[in-house]
Length: 514
Image (cartoon, one colour):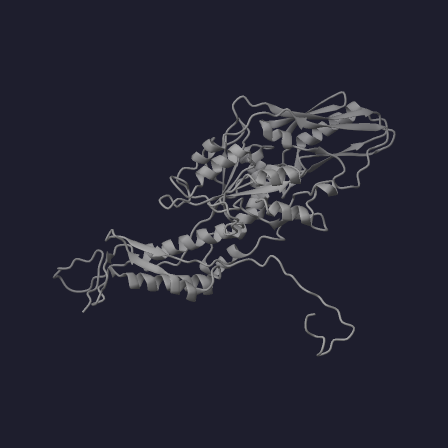
């Protein structure tokens, strides 16, 4: 008969009577999904240490990274959209020899009527009251003070990403962070559509320019060490920066997705540019571990948009949820609104249907504008487009495929390591000895696990075909099992095509499709 296996119980004790050891049984699948925001802090006022990840919890973003900093903004957007998930942040450091971008709001004249002067910086509204007789100098000073006060966002008082200084009606704006990021801070008018400048005043907007210096994203990614981060969000999307992310997350060598590392992760970023610029760039990328959101003249800076998108992705695709909630990772992200993000002012800067279809055929993701002016996710892709032979391949087209792959891998790993933590491997086990495992037993366990992923989790399908083509065999190394797992991932309902045929009178004779 089979013997009972113990971990700690002595086998030859003679003193009576009752002894028991307590061991953990097979645990249910669980895990932790982490989002990390890579951005910039303000030197001298932030508690963050450069290139050191920090768990945020419910921290005040202004206290964490400095009021008006990129990271404070990113934390606010991400936390709003992912209120309870595990979010981390890391200061990526300042570019060597960087130059801050600068722009201005030049006001001239004297008000001949009362009213309000409204301008937008980085998508946020700044308004000052104007009285009859107010000079450009008075109005400029008031606007500069309003910018310094900041703006309300998500029930917090946030700071502008620029400093403001007024001299004789000209408000000079300087990016808080030196580097090329500052060039993307927009200065605009009329975003709400109902603003009228007080009569007598003339306002000229000079865009932010001359920011120089790019972040070394490779150094920042390397600083993540061996901590697992499923979603890595940053506004850095130069070809060199995306190449660094590609190498960091690679399936081979020491990449995070390689079999011997197994930390996984996905890089989410954004680029600004017109349709031609976006599609031309997208055609040069082919990386399943990166998502590039295509924007065109969004009022908010890229870091705000990326943080909002990533907060939704991390919340909706939380790989750490229990098995009964796993279906969420297979649901498409379409229609989910990124709160707080304004659409482009010009209708021509908003992606039309044909534009979005072109973007998706070149690995670029996109948002769409709802009738109420909110910005919603349309489709989130990876940049993967062709296989190793250059043939078109949709296997990893959508970000949901990456989430499903990570979930399935971790679920199977948990089942294997918890079921067979310290076992003897044999071809057979005729007396059902505890602590012995055979290939047929592993095969049965794999079929059972896949059936759970299909019938309970809902993220894979066709368990019968899986069982038919599953391979579990011993290797030439007698201590090793080789297993082939043919996973059929669940798909997303993205297109509903209907043929609506109208009849003056429907009859048996004409009811069939013509």
